[in-house]
Image 1 (cartoon, rainbow, N blue to C red):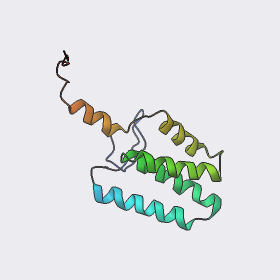
Image 2 (cartoon, helix red, strand yellow; image 1 turned 180 degrees about the vertical axis):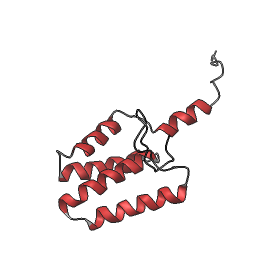
Image 3 (cartoon, rainbow, N blue to C red; image 1 turned 60 degrees about the vertical axis):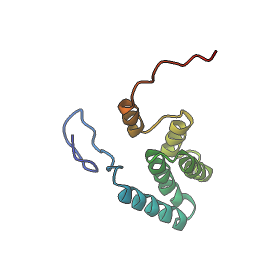
Image 4 (cartoon, rainbow, N blue to C red; image 1 turned 90 degrees about the vertical axis):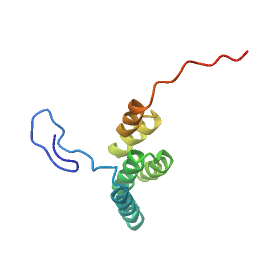
Length: 116
């Protein structure tokens, strides 16, 4: 598999893998860049940065901010396909991949306690 943030050319492999979200500094810098782009962009030009901001917020576990960003994107252009997909992802309650990894590392719950 290609390194995070890189491109791969093997058949059946992802062409793009997301950057390492364990790097908090990088994740915050990406989020700030997308916020700046969305604020500075005017009208339809803001749709793409808002959609990417929604994806970044979701990937970092901030579903509320992701919802606000995607709602703004769809208010500007309801037909923007990527924003529609991100909206569906959020409404379905899908968790980012790291959330599943955290769950796998959790211990199995103990026996249920019965109250008398």
